[in-house]
Amino acid sequence: MPPETVTQQRADVIHNIGYRHYEGPRLGRAYARRSLFSQSLRGAYGLGRSAKSKVAPMLLFAVMCMPAAIIVAVAIATSADELPVKYTRYAIMLQAVIGLYTASQAPQSVSRDLRFKTVPLYFSRPIETMDYVVAKFAAMASALFILTGAPLLILYGGALLAKLDFADQTKGFAQGLVSVALLSLLFAGISLVVAALTPRRGFGVAAVIALLTISYGAVSAVQAIAWDQGDTGPVSWIGLFSPITIIDGVQTAFLGATSSFPGGVGPGTGTGLVYVLVLLGLIAGSYGLLMRRYRKVGL
Image 1: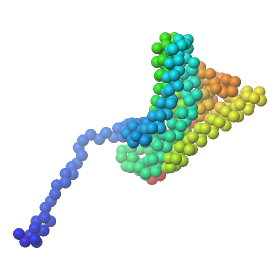
Image 2 (image 1 turned 135 degrees about the vertical axis):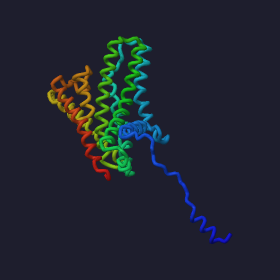
Image 3 (image 1 turned 90 degrees about the horizontal axis):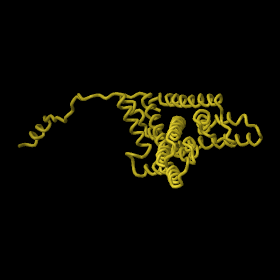
């Protein structure tokens, strides 16, 4: 067959490459929001990512739970009448671990999307700004709640094994869960706002650590100075200027906790209401700032 005829035959061939109209179910925004939440929550513990990404969150989770396991072992071995640490005090004692976890995972959740320009791809699907912000906020808060709630569950289980009073332990456990739930929402909101300001993960980590550490150090120092000078009145009000002391004040006023402020002088019911309003305002404000940050698709 002449070459010209072969070429003509090949040019006339029509190939069916299989494009078909999609007729399956369209799962919509709710499914996309749930998927983004699940992916972000798993990512907060390195699940579905490289082995290197799992080291920091899993190590911090282990460090967070280890003291609770030791406390339970001692309580059972010594037949203690009560746990040496209250449920509401545990997160305050280990605030450094919580701060490190927050600082390491909040930028991982949002900074990478900014750096690699993947946010416009999210918004090209049936998902809106509110869906993205809600999913990321809920995932970070849930990850923190797992981090802070798991040790309390260990303490509670150990207390029941040690045959401590069921009613007292259940009440303390419930108070502790409320406390860490509020802490999780507050820390998640603040850290995500800070992390969303920069596409550089390292800058986000440093900024979150600086915010949590410097604010707590400054508040504690000023409170100590006021206490040493005998001016106890401002001690409670000064606590409004640091995230962890806000949680301390709320649980002291309403959850039966012992304050970690100098001299154990925590806010009363009246001042505690101000703490609650500030806490809710910071959570709502963080959500509002995130919504404003992600209104521009191009970023």
